[in-house]
Length: 57
Picture 1 (cartoon, rainbow, N blue to C red):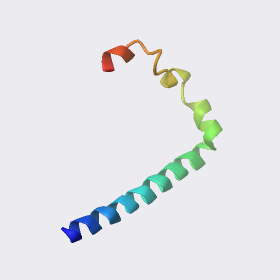
Picture 2: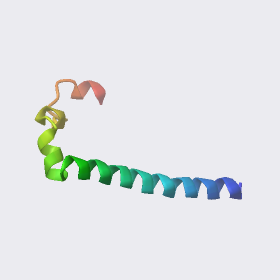
Picture 3: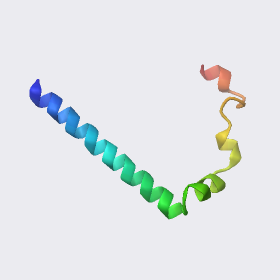
Picture 4: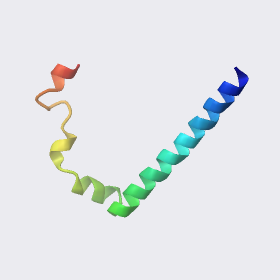
């Protein structure tokens, strides 16, 4: 049981580092966070105003 816990902790830290590095690389290659928000269509940011929002809840 101790080995499983240690493995889970190691995997958690590896995933945190991997997700952080991937996110950094994507934002860097796009040209920054502002460029990322400019390139994504504004319709993608509609959450509450989306026509199917209340079907999901």
